Image (cartoon, rainbow, N blue to C red):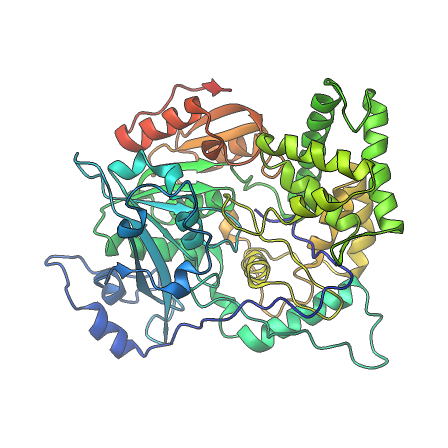
Length: 536
């Protein structure tokens, strides 16, 4: 999910939060081929890249599944009360060898981290179901470790498999160093665009050899190598948010290898980065309006009893925290912390009571609830959420955010700079006075990015692929509802849109039994709901 990823600045935050880099070793082609050919299944057809290069060693490799090491599990929040029985015993990890460049596969390789939960049921196995939680930049490995219980029914007949896409998590993560170099003395105005440029220059220095190869088309090709490595004839897939784009690009590239595919919280492939930012600002504003209407309809709402008064109060706190930030246990709660808290709570209606309580505390001069909500995205346990960024003037964003930037910038030719920012801020603030100013800086993420981008991943036409199930929530703030219909038209393969009439993001994970039954019935039995079916 591009957008909504601005750095949060907290006064008094000491030092950069640096995510340790675990760089996969680069192997020579001859070594990769020798390893990959061990355990080759007889009769496996040769795979050929678009340019005619032989990819057979990658497609015929044998995966060595074993218990996940501590370096993998330490990145997630596993072991909670929702961990299903036998979870630890069933969780396995492996590394998938893929070419760094699919146009020059003999030059060097990289390793993609995989994890899986073996199927539990006694019935006939359906192969593997590959998950992607969104982002881009989110760890699929962490997501499955954290959220395996959400797929218990599907996990009876599928091996549930997830992975860290190239450039993320444990799959040669993008690195831009440990700290951001200060601006040169007497040079630059040290404004927002200047800092984004310095971040991007650092990414080029540390990851210049990786950045050309982290785009969605390459990640989709990795998924086809994964499909072959788990011995599936077709890819069965469940993707959330950005994962919907990844799945659609796979279907475009490999229509004859596409199996049962569900895209939940669907991105609109017809919108560019600027248009997506405006749509998200409006989407989060609509979600906030819905929250406010729900709040004032009940007793003791901290926003009052009048709709106009409620909106003024929400905007008033934003300006107050901008002028006079508050301290909570040594941490500063400012206007960006406040907006981040609102945004996190709007991903799911189940978080509305917590937001209401936090605003009641804020009304009494206590910002601790706002701080807790702003940190609630840090666990990475929910689909399509990325960690909060705690960065100061000379600090780098954490690795998840750098990966998001790298993938997004590779996937677009758009390059907005300082001259574009005033117009962006005006247009986005008009779309949402609260969320617009927070989204506008994300349009500078690719300013002077060291690698050229292209728009090829926006082509998702897949008329030769089987129909998919697209799940869309009417009041989804991050991937607005109409995007699913735009995706269905662009796919041009008779895909069906299932409407969830409700609030939030990633409908399958809301627990709505109607949505879950339709998704499970399609993935388990191949049964698509009728057109215009709705839940909620």
